[in-house]
Image (cartoon, rainbow, N blue to C red):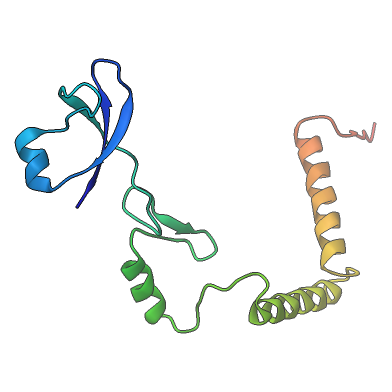
Length: 142
């Protein structure tokens, strides 16, 4: 039997009542204090997982899912992809491997490591933006 939540229209307060659907449809919700018609309160229903009004967005793969079955079909068609916990050993190994590859690539370009490359590129970009705004030094040959 469903649980109905109601509020008395005459000031008795809120209450809950368990009743059969046909009882509710025939009599409505009655205040247990005064016995008069009460207003039905529709509460938020807790949901778990994605739904059309609240899709699950996974930025790393550029996808959003409105149901678990949609997400399951997506990953079944792509066995090379999966969602893992950040503490999962496969994720840690992948992250460490990616970092090592980034360091090797940065060293090949003349940087100390990936972090050094990021710092120097950021500094160079800031310098160019400053010059574009007219804040940089301008040298004259005259």
